[in-house]
Amino acid sequence: MNAGQIQVIQDCARGALTGKFTFPEIIGRLAQISVERYHADYSRQEITYYLSDGDSLVVATPHPFHATAAEFSALAVEAAVRQSQRNEHSYLDFIRKTMTAGCVGYFVQITGRRVIYFGRNGESHVEHFS
Image (cartoon, rainbow, N blue to C red; front, side, top):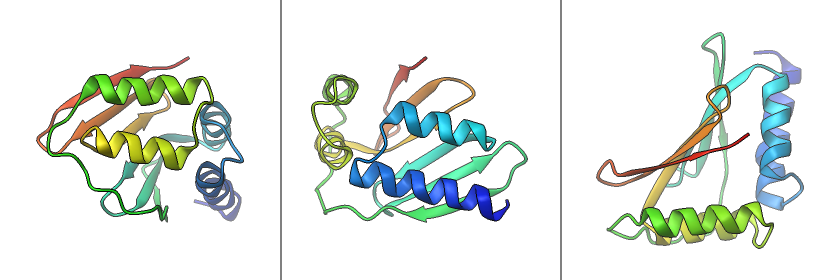
């Protein structure tokens, strides 16, 4: 991974937390530098970005503590996703709402055009994007 790729990844992580970049903007920027997927881990407050050549980078994404619900609600996750799509809340609000829905993290598959949200017990909800 080169310095330019690292800078773009760090900018995208910061831009998500501050609201500077939307999800589609982040996906576009990451795709341009060969990021094929990333994993947001709420418990560790970090995102791991994976390049198509197998290289990876972990970036801290500190956010306020929120208890994660014991039960996973795919409907509540989907509702939070729809709010994001309508620009009705921030990424930090999205994290809070999905944690309240029992989500512990998600994988964004850029090349596969889908996001897989998952709960403590392996439950999942898949959202496709274009």
